[in-house]
Length: 264
Length: 244
Image (cartoon, rainbow over all chains, first blue to last red; front, side, top):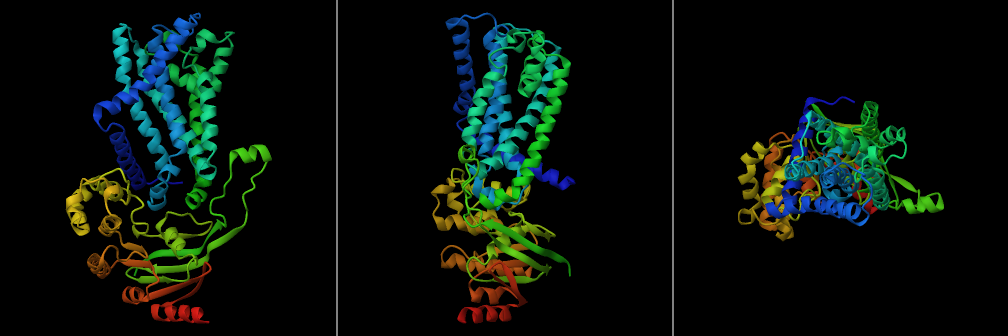
């Protein structure tokens, strides 16, 4: 499959067009739109901090300040989970326009993932505010952040490329996806750190390898808590997994593309 | 003369029940899907080519695969058999309001649809006034699209697609839209476009329009290409079939 320069130009132009439109809709009424997109993860972080620190008062399960630790995790996870849930509807939700515009169909899925990425990036100033408030220092590993972004983009795009055509074929796929995501939320070190909760030391890399989101979230957090990193081979594994998921997503999408266009 | 459209053994198969109604629940609990498996070919074995500047009319009864063939050429459906090669861009007058978003204004919609059909932002900037002017929507530029009347909506769609400078024009029954005055404008614009060496591929049930715009006719029956000849001859064959 040869990708020509003009195809890439189409991708860029159309993707920008759609993402800009999404963001404009999302942040219409500037302030309020922004507040809403940040408020949800922020409130959830507060709720979890309250539950684990005040109500249960368990041993330390994440780094301190816990609320900051939670916030980074919640924002990262939110990008993934909203990209996948909305990725389900990225074709069906725009059926009419998908049916009438001759652009590479993957763009409809990429658009959701990229829009959600921008929401994630736009919410980061809140993390900075919290870090400043707690006078929490940063280290050079902040440079790993873009790597986390890249890996998460590939992973989310790959998963969305799988669920989007399946949702066109069977509309209850969305429900299944939602249930799986909710379970995955607790299996992913969002609320906790693998380094603190894995019952035995040698389970940490295994859990890290099985779930690419575990490695990705630690890459985001590494600049704030260097002690929370996983061993390097986990990251190699995460990278390979993310690439494989993207390739698989591409294959699944291509396999169902023709059927999707008939059924949509 | 350059060949612009080349179809080779083109075919596409559909399920008779358009929605296949599969559900994960059913597959999980019954181990299989109970959706009907019966299929039919909407278009099959279509082989033809269209050269630059030709105007082809597609004739046939409802459900004979005309619109599907048009969609295959437009690239918004993918064939199950054979292939179609289209050399050059396509301006599709199919589902005119399909790309428009109700909650967005006319201005935003023009930029979105124009962009999806391959125009850059600068190109749309240049044509924006013409597009709005032709659709006669100067007073509604910043009105949400859903507030327009249905006639206004198709006028805007027609106006956007006909300002694309693609060499191939695909028309699915929407030669003229809106009220009588606007329909005349549409006709004039179509003639203007065709005199500019565009290639036309149209589906229509109107013999007047077919003979007015087309020189060549293709007759489809149950997805099969029955006749490919001059438009008069094709229409005659179609009418004879109907009268039989």
